[in-house]
Length: 231
Image (cartoon, rainbow, N blue to C red):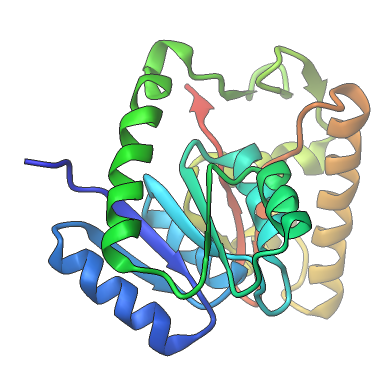
């Protein structure tokens, strides 16, 4: 019996998304749908996918940008789809991190076979011994990147990291962060938190250009730390 895969279909065309979700579910997989990058982030917050099927042309954030972001924060397989099949688009898709590339219309059975083959190829890379992770040291007030570089945190950076890393992968509400920082829950508080996180991302890039701080905003909700964490 073939393995049951956890799959997220990211497609803004609702009819196509529903068809793919329905057929792949009938074929025995655990499948969810998302209409754009923001919906994908929400799904990934509590649903670690084995494979993401990602439309290239999405509203707000295109598939290449999303694929590049996934490559930094997730070990899932990526299958990219598009309505156009120009060589340049396919090259951009592969350079962005896609494992496979499909031109629409998509045959669900062909996609199913590709999903199973991709999952088999990715399985050896998921060995826990090979995983690299971020590490937070509350006693030293430092965060260590997956490349082993330790970065000192300011008092406010420490508070934010402590809140987010207490529940890695889960969303911490803005009000919780405001309360921990002693900021009022208003527009200015939100701007202060975003400025703080922007500076922390820049600090991480400065000391370790190969790493990007995996903190993502949940628009209007809060923030989440989306990467493996070494306890």
